[in-house]
Figure 1 (cartoon, rainbow, N blue to C red):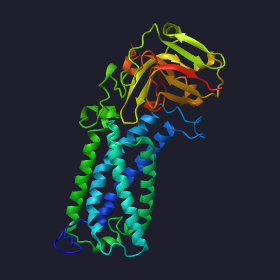
Figure 2: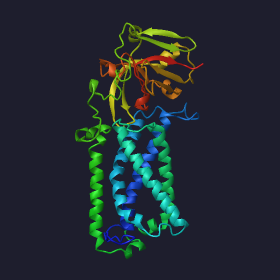
Figure 3: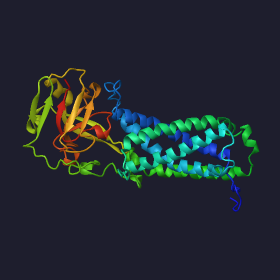
Figure 4: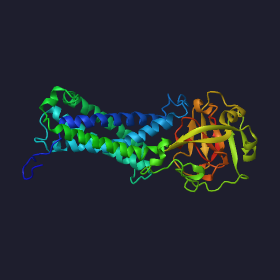
Length: 378
């Protein structure tokens, strides 16, 4: 950039449409994957009325896959967005600021897009570490801004479509005007960006794709670290539960024929063992062996209708997910358990002792721990 002039004159190479388009293709894919998988996560946690009874319980690894992709694509987008901004930042100094309606729309979409994208990636990254240095609720704001970003992105692509088309392919007519000597530098830049994306992915994705767990350097969770070799997001002390003794524990199953069970009575019921992953919204996941009573057997004993939804109420005294709801797809799935044991051992208090919910294809925040009540609404 040449100083002392207004507007500034940039002399740097590779701040061109060809480079911006090349990086933009990768960034667009990352944003698309992150947005779609984010919608899946949001609707599974907060299903609208028409979907509440239709949230699927299969495949059992579905949420593990989609949420793992969501966090991985979001992290990969960080170096991609940085490279994209580097290629286009000289355009911030274009003069006049607005030359036409089209140019004004372009500037507006870019401003909203950049601000929203930086916000989404920054807050999403901090969410994986469960650090919330802001006064607002993360989930609804993150969800709302995601739609804003996608809207701005679509507007930006529409406005820039002719330029994108001209520089999309290697032999596109628009590339002929670019200096041929920039080719090697452009390839080197793209290779460096690709290496950065590969590095941040390799050193974080092992928290959900466990074959790569030995390469974890920067992920806030390791899938093997925690009580009973399974991570914990919320401890019993943090939830205000403390130690619940077997003598004082009672499970209430509220339905047409309400009844109460002690822990010994739960243990005396037919026990089933299933292997299911627990997958958290922060991106980590791991499969484990869970042993307990099938929820559908408890509901049948209470006379619950086949199509009934179920409220699962925790004994924890505080927390946004103290109560969760299950539609019939999950409640009646034979793999859905009120688990009493983990990997052959009695549940650790931090994993929900005396009893916790475990169900296939369900977000970890909805796998309620320290379950005290199962309720079938009248």
